[in-house]
Length: 173
Image (cartoon, rainbow, N blue to C red; front, side):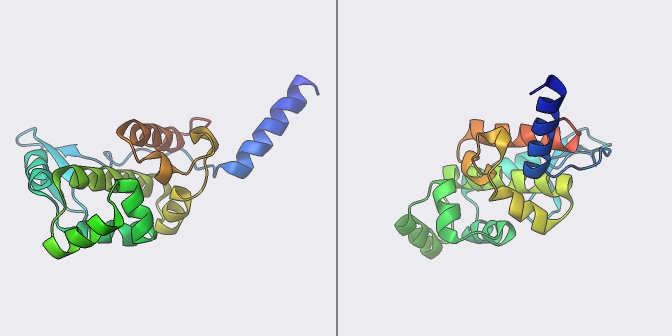
């Protein structure tokens, strides 16, 4: 194969694996913005409204309500068992958390991590069905793993976020 034929084959293979999106201006970022009056960083919570970072940290430390887990499950359109596996909650522990009504601090932090990735993906793809499909589809840039599987660790979640940024800015992945 010549160099140009190899390149065309590679491009055709990538086009099948990756949906190409036009380059667009970011909307201020999915994870936050600065208040004009105080300069404080403000982050979006799971309901789409904005909260200040200190309050979000406080909510994580006190434990999110279990309904935040199930809201994320609905947004991602995955089973509770699948999401619990990614978040690192054993099935029996999840039942116990439902009875208690609150997640533990570390569980809350992992739920927020996935929620932030979902929101970033929604900003990039602009369509909930595309985001749901993307999260459960193997990605070449992630070693043929799904973004959901890759995001089960902090470093994996950062790599998924980097991939979303590359897609958003039209960088070849």
